[in-house]
Amino acid sequence: MTDSTLSSEIFLDRVEVRAFSRATELTERVKVACFNLFPEEIRKRLKVKTEKTEGHLHDPIRVIRITL
Picture 1 (tube, rainbow, N blue to C red):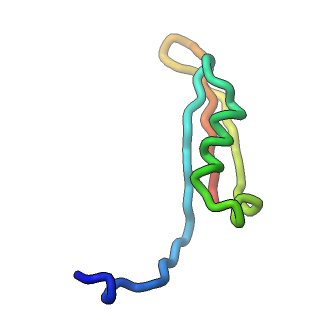
Picture 2 (cartoon, rainbow, N blue to C red):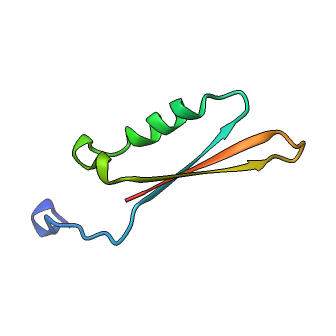
Picture 3 (tube, rainbow, N blue to C red):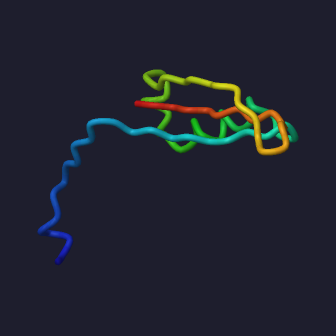
């Protein structure tokens, strides 16, 4: 397949990024790293959810979910 046969448009229904922030990490820095995966012009449209959970040894973990 050559580049000329590839479509120039991609249609996506949803994009989701999930990251896990452990107690030794700064959650805000993990969020910034996830936001940097997206182009600046669409970052305002992202939805962020953070949920608290815990690891096997009861250490706190935050799950950061970013969807477009």
